[in-house]
Image: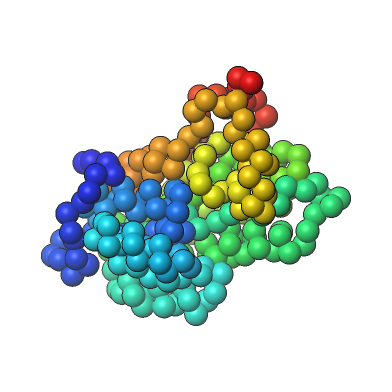
Length: 262
C-alpha cells in the first residue's frame, strides 16, 4: 500500500468501503503533510485545525473535509466528533506546539499552560470524543505525535519537555486501557524536523533564533519524512502495533549530539 503524497482520487466520506482519518493540526507542517499522505493511501481525511482558510484549501486539494477545531476547547472538539460521525479508522493527534525556551528560573507560566493545554489536555479531549467511533470501526488506530523531547530533558526546554513527556505517558496509559478493544495506540517521536512554523512560533517570530536551531545541519527531517512514517505505521496489519517510532535526521545522534557544518 502506498503512502505517497501524490494527488489522490477524490474520495467522499460516504463512499462504500472508504476508510476515514482525522488529522488535527492539519493547517501546516507535519499535519498538512500527513493529511496528504493518508489521502494518497486511500483515506477520506478530516482536516482539523483552527485556521479555516488553510484547511479548506487543503481539503479541496486532497478531496477531504475541513473541520475548524481548537483542540483545547471542548465544544469545538464535540463539533469535530459530530462531523466525523459514528465510525473512524485513524486518529492522528498532531496538534501541539512549543512556546518559549526559557530556563525554569525565568519560565513564563502562560507559555507552560498553553503547552500543556494543547499537547496533553487537547490530545485527551480529541481522543476521548472520538474513541467510540474508533472502536466502532473494528480496527481503529490512535497515533499520537510526540517528540524526542518526550524522552529526554534538555536545558531551557522544561516546559516543552514536560508537556511532551505528558503526551508520551498518556499514550502509554491509553494502550493499557484499550488492550481488550479493537484500537491500537501508537506514537511517533520525531527529533529535529524543519518546518515553516514550529521554531518560528517557539521563538515568537524571531527568524534569527529559529534559523539558529538548524544552523549547519545539512538535512534535518522534513514534514514529509514524518508523514510517510505515520502513513506506514497506521497501515500495518490489524495484529501489528508500532507502539513507538523514534525518527531523527542522520545528523542528530541524540538530543545534545548534532553534527553541524559551520
